[in-house]
Image 1 (cartoon, rainbow, N blue to C red):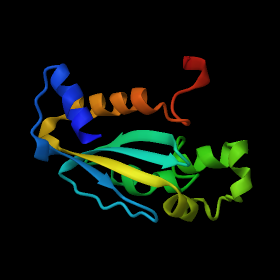
Image 2: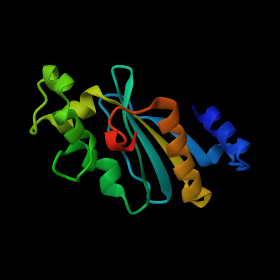
Image 3: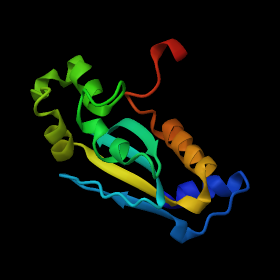
Image 4: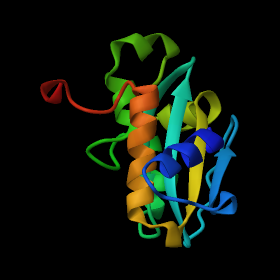
Length: 144
């Protein structure tokens, strides 16, 4: 994924040094460390399908580490999407266990970008991943 992203950036005239972009496979169960000098694009994948792709910056620690694991933390998060998905009912996910279920069952891959690369690079990478993986819980039906 890293080489593909660096190549896409190069195609639009952005040269980013290899060490300024890291792909971090968090595994399962996963924890998410936060480095305040990085920009992030995060992905959640379950059973071969990307569920959610988003971004977080140095002022978005809660978004990166906590909000997607609690259905009441924000208007749009992975936990809430899972609880509203009829196809996920078979996994016995509840308001009480959804955060632990995500950490234990959902693969998380984060793209760490050096802050000096800038928000346009971060936005480009997020958009590229949306186009490549078409996450299940992104976008609205009314926008399609």
